[in-house]
Image 1 (cartoon, rainbow, N blue to C red):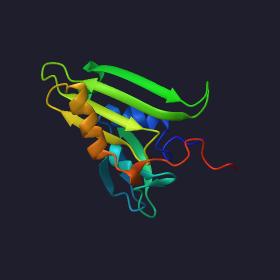
Image 2: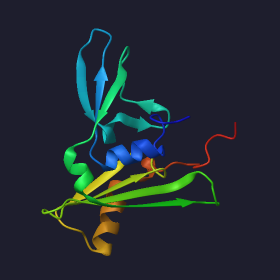
Image 3: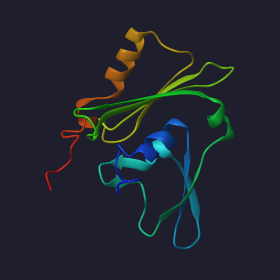
Length: 143
């Protein structure tokens, strides 16, 4: 099961959208913190260093107070996600964050001081997601 190594993994998407932090522990007991959105670096690749393990995941308390919406698109019913989009809006500040996964090789997160217009959002996505970030085949290798 591809829980933390795949860009389309639901837990990666959710934890990134909720501004989670990975607690990574080395063999000598040293720990480092890394935002979830930076943990998965590509299909089957993470930012783990030799001898490190993912010890825990931290979500800020403010994450549960946010308004959230999620949409998933597949090329066929019940198929692999072709795109998974999670939007959050922080209470009070109105900060809007959009997290894109599945269609991208790693989570892509866009943040705005307030919700953008449809045109502004499209332009931001087109600027942030270049061709090198697009997954060639959302169904994976034939094997």
